Image 1: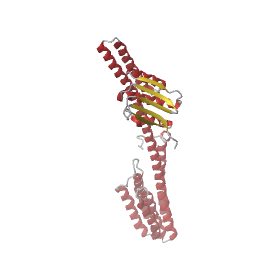
Image 2: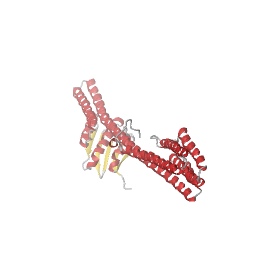
Image 3: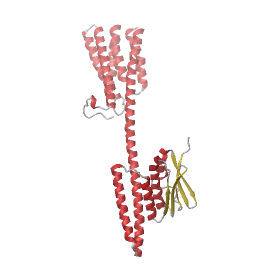
Length: 375
């Protein structure tokens, strides 16, 4: 998720931005809070002012290193390994702190050791290699024991390290889950847009393809009339003009509002187109369920367009009987339906619980919309 280019108020942020701000802010705040507590505890137990100054300086170094390591783990695009500066501050400060802790009495030595436990646990818990987490948790009781020589304090150091690692890892896990959900939502929205564009382009193809086929047939007929000096040429040219205007109107309707497909309109257009090509047609879809009307209208559009393109038909029949829509022609259209093909037609009728089937008998070709068998 990209970061906002300018600071946003809480109310202006999206839910994912709010979650990220909460998680990141909590991790930073708690780390600083724990380090301040460690500094206060160390200052209270260290008897010399010079050691107090050392404790404050060590706290600043470990805090800076831990925050830089945590920042790398919280990168927006993907978690990355800490850089050399972050690791240098964190590990270098830890080494110096441990050397001093081992030279101090148990009470003050243990306080300095807890500096290191806090810094390493919080700073390195964001590293993706889990061996690093376990190493920090495993070494913490060792540091507690070698500086205090008490089993209880060693166990306390181990518990603190485990709690801090768990807190950071669970927070990062929550943040990644939310971000992945947001990515999935954006991807789903993009796919929905792409699917709608595909549907629109398919509608444009179907509408204009049929009308252009009709114009081509009418133009060929008019050309033949003109060549013979037939007076019907003028009327046919008028039909060409009317069809062109109809195609333009339908294209505008599609562009304006995704024109719904009407079955009666499609049947009328199909009969007109077939008649212009000299093909007889018969249609009887009485009793067709209302939910089937629009998908079947699209199937009729595609089937008739491909009869003109790919067959030598003289008769096309469209019927509905016993739950099956059948479109037959006697000109043996190819098995592929052209356009967006059988797969595309199958997608149109799939929401109805139906499927597309084809059959061939000599010169006769049939395309059927049939209910699927219950699973």
